[in-house]
Length: 354
Image 1 (cartoon, rainbow, N blue to C red):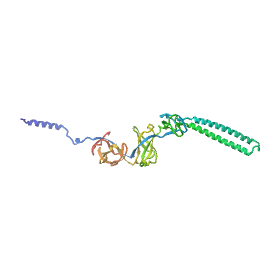
Image 2: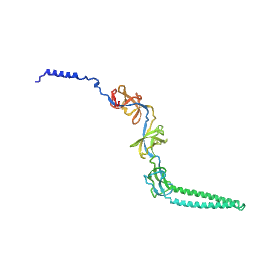
Image 3: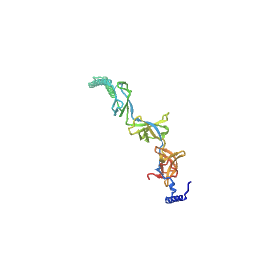
Image 4: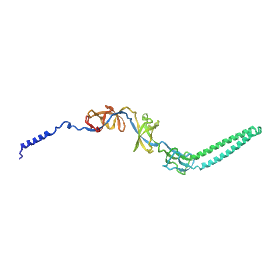
């Protein structure tokens, strides 16, 4: 049977009461959660352009399929991949037939030149005879033969120069520096004038050819800065030219964007961010400051006393890191960009970096 000992129980209670007298009282402030650490940014006045992303291709500004200008057999064609300078030979057509023609032209020229000299001498002799020795008709006939011979000589000179020109054109030369990309005809093949022989591409001067919706034509202008993004690189560039005629089927028009850096590989697929709407004055906040819920979008503004104040906003144009907003904000307001995900209305905050 257990016996109670009232004396010992009362003694223990007295010890507890004595210890409690020396402990500090628990205040209401100690029951509240500590301020939440947050990062803030300023609301700025500005504007953003809405963009539309379209695909494009890196192309060369100079890409030519060069053809033979004379008929003959190919003696030599440059190897694909060869880098050449302007004026360097790319292919050569056998010109021996033309060289023989040149020799014939020069012989004809010499013969006609001698004939002109003879007729000139005869005309001079007739003119030197005493008056009445030669009739006027003889002198006129000699002068006419001399004049026709001079015209034939000039025609022969033109034929010789034409042959020389064809001999020079038997060698296909590069109209601009670049790389030989393709052989359309091989060594030993017989080609006619106008037959494509070799393709030359300028790999230093490149640009992007993109297609934009015709509906966005009003927002595009030569000189606008756009973003070109590849698989591993990105660059800011300007619209070089716009072809103001849309395709009837696709409803797209061509936009060409210059690339100052020649490191882009021709044929690469890229994405181009083109302006899709005109800029409008508004307030801009970091995109990380905006919280989107089913009931709308809002941000947390830093109120007096470092209190989080929820402000509903309407979103406008945006970029990768900023967005336009409309609502109860003003330029210079501080909004929370980190630490606000689970923050309740009116919570105390501690601004990092202060």
